[in-house]
Image (cartoon, rainbow over all chains, first blue to last red; front, side):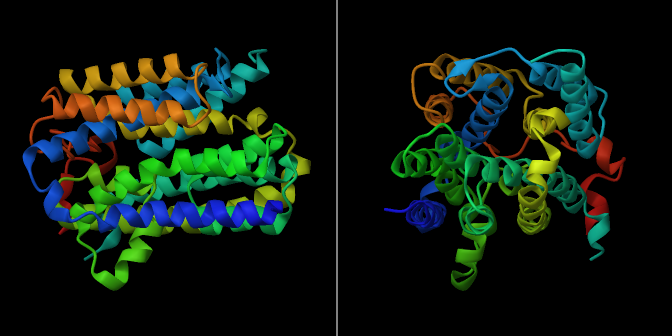
Length: 103
Length: 246
């Protein structure tokens, strides 16, 4: 199959995956235990995404300029900065760290 | 309803701008990985899930096959199916609206919606973030793909740092209590332990299984589940909170 074929298949799989979740009857999740699972899941996924985006490089765990972004963003959040400012500070911190020689 | 007075819409726009700009990085990296302009745009329009898109071009750039690129994207996208269940409960979209709702179901729209306590605000947050991210992500994918070579390495501009900050920013309002914080730490550690052992994308799924198990075991947020127990976006909305949104 050509690259185009794989791209279109990946797109179709993505759309189908998203849609499948909507086919699960809402009633099934309408109890406190499932809501608790959903809440934990959101937290777990966001924590995992944060960790991967900060420390993962392919299949290795590395410390690089992104650590500066994480630290700077945490300080900004602790000081209750608005979301967009937090993101800008993250980018700035990573950029500066690289300018100063971080990987 | 004045949209600009809705705290959810304000958060959504911030999220959309931050994420949209990251599309620059995707566009540039995709072209650098060897995809052409149309293929790059197709991924952003149709696949529309940042993590999966980066996984796809990452495998191609590393010399991987089409089937492993597709598999990585599919694995990383499984969480969107989980989100779909949540969004379905949260928004109860009508039948004809389900496909559009499903397509806009991504990390950012779900996080924005579930960060709100009021059902109307949850709905506004979802659509504002979903549509906002979709429009800007595709626009900046195009710009990034066209300007890719001129910009050089997107990492130089700190765009990967922006992604780190954005995900931490989405997580932050949910970890004010001990139990959610413990879940976040456990899941982050599990993810990093898994990174060297399994293909990219899979560590996130392992973390999801651990998180679900912790939630099922009763060690997790209280029964309200989806919402943080404090007004999450304090700094951004001033002191009006959700009351100003009606």
